[in-house]
Length: 120
Length: 107
Image 1: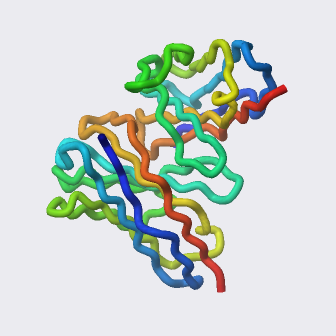
Image 2: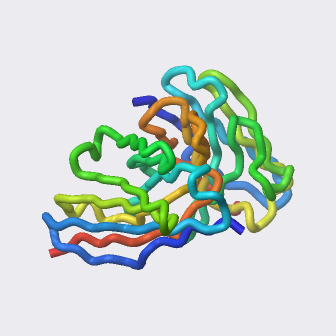
């Protein structure tokens, strides 16, 4: 069955960077895209960006442009999301989610989430 | 960015009830609308895509409709496991924006 397994919780200092991984299994990696969505404590869902590994194409929300980088390693079926210049407002659970490569692309499966805490 | 507005923000209902949640887009998005269910401390679960198509394994008590700017999610015969927060999301234009969520709790 399809699984997206994310890396573990992180505690970071303001101004630093965090890199979260999302390893996919149970499907053909090149047939899907991966999006990243975050959820601050007690808040709603926020789309950050996504990648289609087979096309090497990324899209980022303007809000995160310049701070977020999403890359894919097809050899390990893993997608990484790196967020830099962290501030306290970046404290959130970060989810990866799978979608088709055909746009507009809907999400079908989600990772379990990774809590990133930004604190001095 | 396309703004997605859900109503109501919260809703109380009883087991066995039928409820409807509305999602409105600030501009037309054709039928590129998805619905998700999220329970406390858990990842979202995909319910519906293309406004009305059930994801694999989702029971037929969930149904979606709409096109353009106005969409609905209907849940019939509520069971205890259906009490959760529901989100809509448009995926017609980047960035793929979500509604603010509708919290469904037991009356």
